[in-house]
Image 1 (cartoon, rainbow, N blue to C red):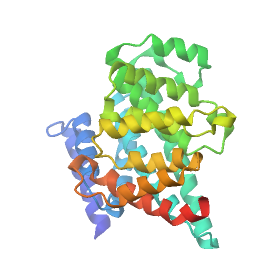
Image 2 (image 1 turned 135 degrees about the vertical axis):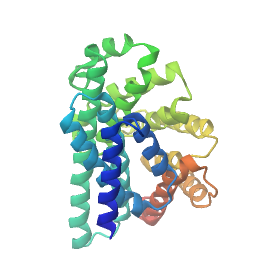
Image 3 (image 1 turned 180 degrees about the horizontal axis):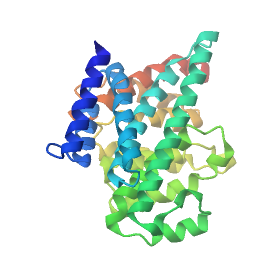
Length: 300
């Protein structure tokens, strides 16, 4: 029954694309994103997203140079990868079954974030030939490209930055991947130089994570990361609880600040009444907070 429903949704969606009477690609992507964000049932969203990803794969096969299709696909892949990431963190019991499942999920997360990055990279190249191959440039060349872009390019640049950051988070065990951290930092810094409140403080949240990957003793800038996290909390008016979860996971744990860790996790666990656009992300944040709580005594 569930499979029939999914197939029906695909057929309906495909008909709307083909006739052009109901929804444009951008409207379709926007409406799906809104529906996903306002859903508090993680399992339902997780089961539904692959159907739409396959639909978009088919449409991209038919028109591989459609910028909107590529960006829509990249967005949904990142959403799905974030759900998988939450599942990975819930597997705290290291028995053989969990280890096997965890490795499988990690591979899936890496594949999704890689494909997402490839698609947004292709989209930005179609958008502006001068921005082709950004992810393969050395930092000095990358810096010159980024500093030459205009304000109207910020949206697609930010989409590249979020996909690149998601890929990096899935590959922190790879030092070649970690070497690309300065480029992603520059993207986010460029975005907030145009608009500090971009994506309701989302760029600050990413910068908080990116600056809290590496300890200060190894050249990292966790205190700068802390400042970005605090700014992100203010810009969202404390509505996005994922900021606090990431603050606890990346900064508090990196600096062994148990008091801050406990405070942040407690605030997430007691949070209620999410606005519609934050329902899913706060549901995932609650799940991740419980996972952090379960391992906090072992960590500190």
